Amino acid sequence: MAQDSVWIYTAGEPVMAVVDGAPVGENGRIWGCPEADKAFKVPFEAARFLLDHLAYSGVVRVDEINRPDGTGTDLDLKKARAESLARFEAEDARRWREYVEYCLTDKMDKKKAIPPTPDSIKRIMDRRGYRASDFGILPIGEQGPMDKQFAIMQQQINELTAALNEALGGPVTKGKK
Image 1 (cartoon, one colour):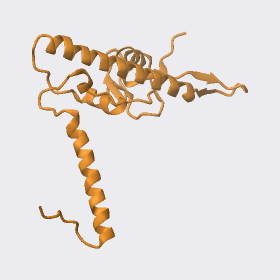
Image 2 (cartoon, one colour; image 1 turned 60 degrees about the vertical axis):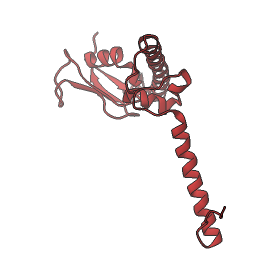
Image 3 (cartoon, one colour; image 1 turned 30 degrees about the vertical axis):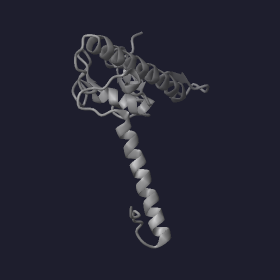
């Protein structure tokens, strides 16, 4: 017996897509999970497309469990969350590996400039703590990691200076040479 709709879930990034072949809904043929950590009921064809082509967002199918008393079903969101987080992490690692390989083999080995890092890869870097500089990758228009570290140290210096000024009751000045 074919199902006409299924539940999907993501604990990763929200995902929406136009799905050719899916029935028309309130948003046309746009289907997906517009919010993370919430299950959505979508047509079977939309779920198939999202699971096959947009797995990098952490989207998974949610199992429906029959209640012991036979009064209906419940969604197994605990299992879906665990599967989604595992898939999301695995896909982040795969996409990062592919990006590094692209930079090293398609650009650096051919002595070509590396284009600016795509936003999707920047989000992975922020999420997972990856650094392109660990592989000697420095895209056009981007600064090395020392600039980020310098900004953090400058902020700490400013905070310490403000605390010292407050403790001494006036501004701290540099000594004369």
